[in-house]
Image (cartoon, rainbow, N blue to C red; front, side, top):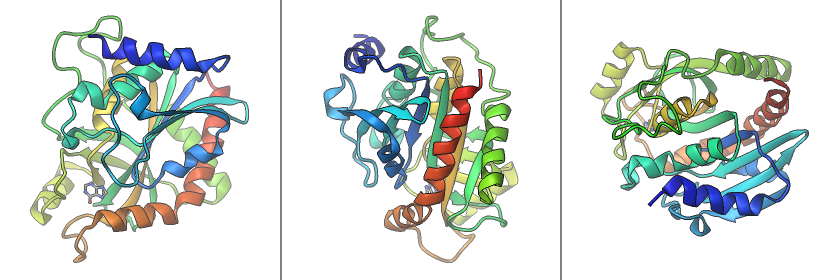
Length: 274
Ligand code: HPA
């Protein structure tokens, strides 16, 4: 069984003349960016071999391929998480399919809990780096040499070139885009206050349950990666409030307008870069 080939062949058949070069994966509550795609081909995850319906509220489970300005994009509206019980090779299948259909750049987005005391709910944060605390790695097992090398370099897991482009656009928009390190945990339970204190000591500014496996697989496959977190809540113990996924979605919805504008402009500018 070759999950990557099956899924890629299926999607390639549907592409027609479209040649997406920028991939986007949208996190909890952030899916409506896909509505900005013009002249879209929309493919339900259920139709794609080895893809699954998403089980998490706020992840609609559609692949939308089309254009935004001059940029040709492939947008995954919703993702697979390790905590849903998927194998890691399923979690990162969208990333590998993007690489195989010709994408060179990837924008990852997610909802995250804020650890850094400068962050407030509703802030958008550009990832400068991550800490993999999931206890696993999507590259475990025999290396797929067609995809990438056995020991991929992760010293610039998030492209500084793409990040500075995001900051330039945010500046022009008068948007206070922050920078930070993302701690990727397994979930699905939220962290305890003691765990958040530990993450703070480790150097994390925010915490979430996605993005890290995708970023590793993308770096392995030679994609340039950037990522934006929406701080949907202050992490456990940073605020006394209890954590609830409905609040996560609500806050993501509140920032959807600037978030969408930032991404729209980002893909247009990224198309112009090598
Ligand atoms: N912790 C982990 N994942 C999250 C959080 C959080 O506080 N908020 C949104 N995703």
